[in-house]
Image (tube, rainbow, N blue to C red):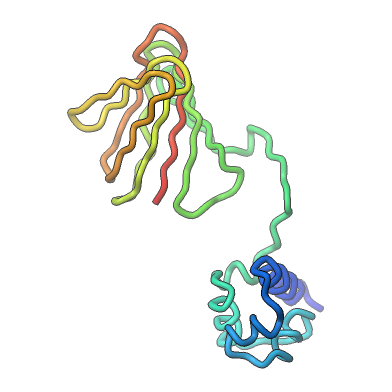
Length: 179
């Protein structure tokens, strides 16, 4: 069995089991004979693109997911593997160890008077900014909000924002962008 067939077989079986489906249930959802599904899960099949599309739709995943290297159930990542960006007296570190479509999370540290440009948001995306400690000023066009520890600002739209430490002590904040 070649590597691609092995990955396809493992992914089909794992995705089916995660959805608590029998081979018969999955085959029915894909409009395929159960025997075809079973053969796909052994890695012995050489499916057409049409069969792969049916399988992906039945499981609610992309074709890429069907043939991707299966993700390890757990993986520890060091800080050097996470996205990081800096501003004037500021650092933001991504907190997602893997790409999650439509979701970004950052931990933002600002020294006194530190500044950082916010990540760009897609039109219609939502951003939630919370201040964990210190005082955070958020500027959006001509408006400004000052967040104290525990407060959350919810923003919709694609306009650029910036963050500034509005206090005399270090400030820690989190940004979550969804959409």
